[in-house]
Image (cartoon, rainbow, N blue to C red):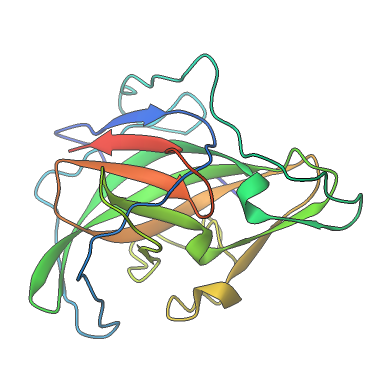
Length: 214
């Protein structure tokens, strides 16, 4: 996967706090339902970017804080070499977050973010990482999923974290393979209810991979 080919200049940078992969009890907004074909987009009035040193950018990077001892998933047993490991065993980092405007979802205004993410597989097995294995939601809320890649603004076949074709209504069918000892990087979008801060988490883990604020 390639990294973000272009990042919009930001008037108000988002602050990203990367913590490495955690074992996370996921965030969602209760009562927030998505009609895949009933949203309309509006341009962002203040797109913001928080690139890391590993993401190309035409603007100065925002500070990124990492924990000296990042949380790690709890492995009940080592996956067999050449087998398949659980998606919660991936090491995920959020490299940058960019505001991508808003959409109307069932009469509510959701924010859209373009998120550049790196997935690293430290195990001896293949990790099959599904579209619904990464969750973005208002910080402190509870969630089992998020609206990933419903908006394809800024996503191309070259920079997408997930392989084409992307069918967000069936996220379990959208899978990126992360080979043993290797990493994949790319972009995905998320539509989230408006909030001042958000958390990025992995399904079936506890703790945030990263948090960012508007």
